[in-house]
Length: 199
Ligand SMILES: [Zn+2]
Image 1 (cartoon, rainbow, N blue to C red):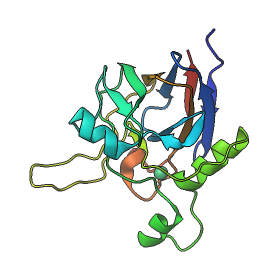
Image 2: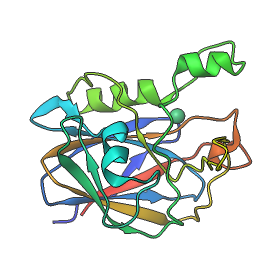
Image 3: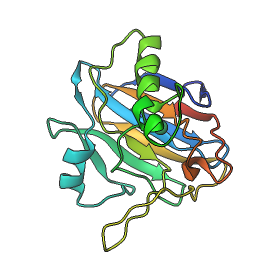
């Protein structure tokens, strides 16, 4: 049975359980929002989707339909089964945190994806054991042959979505990234809500 569409409020986190074999659709509702995404083994939260282990297996920097993400125990945890976005996702950058915003000039507490992960998990009664490097859906961090990276606005359009199938019982966590000091959530630097649905 298809689940209700759930909101990831702007600048906030949300988590949901997804049973093995079910999928979760993550929707870039307004078109320019980066969604930091984590997946944990529901039986053992210390096993989780790992970008480092996945890149060594996938041999690419951005996933395409059919690609599987691995855990820190190198087992498949989610598979990309559909992607209507231009297919630009980041697997390189750590989740933003309060330290990050201090470094780029914010002098007070700033909402951040790290705290959103903990809060989203807490809402469904779970404690995230750590903050794995996230799959940054829709995030446009172009890399060059000389090895440079930059923070750019997404190429996604309103309503673009990606569908991820659970390869084990998982807890998925999401953060509508609150970055408003760099243009990763669009050139207006205005984080928005996003949505997801278990299908
Ligand atoms: Zn963030």
